[in-house]
Image (cartoon, rainbow, N blue to C red; front, side, top):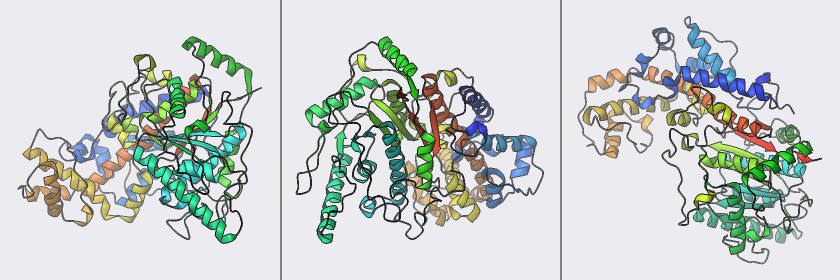
Length: 587
């Protein structure tokens, strides 16, 4: 079950001991350079961040051009580096460790994830994927087109191997992935979304898709079905998946929605049938004690010997080895697998998926996979690491709150944090990750590399904001790191124009006087601001690796192997790592 030809540490099946050793190295590295990863670039001048670097680093980095920063510091693929001066060993060690210890962010053979396709996905039209049928591209941005096609294809393959035709898409938004899985791949899908407005849009887009298909059929004079045996239309359920609720509460939530038909289903039309969540027929597990649940899971693991080959599934995604997955017209036929009858009254298994499930939601889904007997497969794409709960910061800013008035009971609640999830990482000294370190892990290193190589004017925006922070603190020492609404095209403005627009956004007068000579001096240090931010960005993949590795170890501690796949092209989707786990089949 080997994914890629990379160093052994990052083979998908690396052992439990190798996982633990990697976690130790990651925490050690991040502890050593915590000052950098915890830094706010807007405090570059107000906190004299440059002076916190070793003098030898300052001398080596201070005069680098943006393209040199890209090649010598950030790009791990560069083999022939030409240094303008001798770098200190400590700086070389940091760069090497950050590159080696981070999970790979691209598939083998280059940035393209579709090397086997006849035509690159967006070559002919930058806004339209040539590998996705037009009815699935409507209302969908290129980034999302790329994501739903690749993740949907992987989910379909895993569903086939698991003989499990039911999928629950959590955080489904406007239903783009749900729609592709259902209409495009023949799966029986329920999407859960907390925002009723997004659910309403999802149902609207379903109706538009069905109407477009009807018109195509009428024009052609023959049926142009999306797959040979159409399954039920997707169900879009309004519901909030509470991270503090247990797995049986989650299943009961689906059953309750089924009984009350709380979903906003498509209106009945000539080619439509109103669908509610009752089609899923997920039944709650019998009420058992936690000890009984644990014993049942252990007995199941002992009895299960046959493993689904995740690597084969991924390889077929990468090479387009699915029915018409690699064709220019998209997916036209894909026969549903009638092994699992989602309409049966018996216990039904399902695949759990979350595409960029925000904050605690991704870790919650992993806990449900580990504990819930019905969940057989999970594909988890995380994002917004700064919004995950930790012991040090159990309620980080920006966390979504339930829009529903009803609250779960104490009996349904659990107080587990989203980082660390594993016992092993929790026991490592220095494992703590600050809000700022986790926020930094969400940055797009590929995008910044492009800016560096092009010496883009966008690079000056961090310098502008750092100078503004100094001006704000000089006037209001109590105001630290205030949120400043984005100034459009700030990079194209002079600093005085930028300040005139930005200062009122923090409650200060647009004509607030400041020392223009001092500002000019700070502007001359823009290159150092870029260097320091690049050091922060160098550690960003290290932080992301530790967060995701902790989740893999969490599953390992509970008897489940998992694999981490750079499924998306990072140039399209910076959070491109997909955590996949499959429960073994019963012998």
